Amino acid sequence: MTLHAAEYDRLKAEQISRIGFRDNLLYAQLTSIAAVAAVTASAGRLYLLLVLPITGVVLGWTHLCADHMVTMIGRYIREDLTPRLTAAADLDGADTGLFGWEHDHSRDTRRRSRKWFQLAVNLLAFYLPSLTGLIVVWIAGQPSPLVIVASLAELVIITVLAVQMCVYAGLPRLRKGGTRA
Image (cartoon, rainbow, N blue to C red; front, side, top):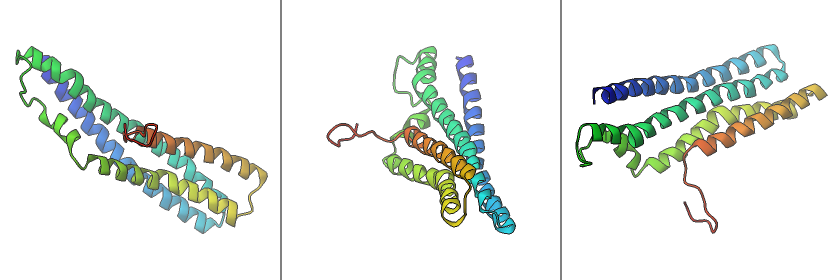
């Protein structure tokens, strides 16, 4: 039982560390957007906005991976560690409230709306600035063929990121007929 409790402590420490890292990536993204905008404005070179999709993808993907690991640690604690610890403590499967928070927070009635809002924030922070930078380069600049090719490649990459953010958001899927799964 002591080993299971130690495993829980290590997992929670890892989860807390990843949450802090993940949350700081949002600030890093906002800082990079401001820096790219400032450098672009001072240099007067619109093609420098092509850096936005690169930072958006690197920071956005890292954010997504960290968030996924936070989720997976929570799932592991709920679905694997809690039953093993309950069995090791010889609690006969009784509802002991062991690691209650790990189970209760996922049953919150506002969880679904928070997940939708978090997805919107993630897309707003990592996808929209990248897309906006590309659009500004296409419309306001006079992009060379090389810039157009590079920007189209970036468009594909940021769209893949946006799709992955939607997939990993953990939102209910729609089944045939428009009902929620």
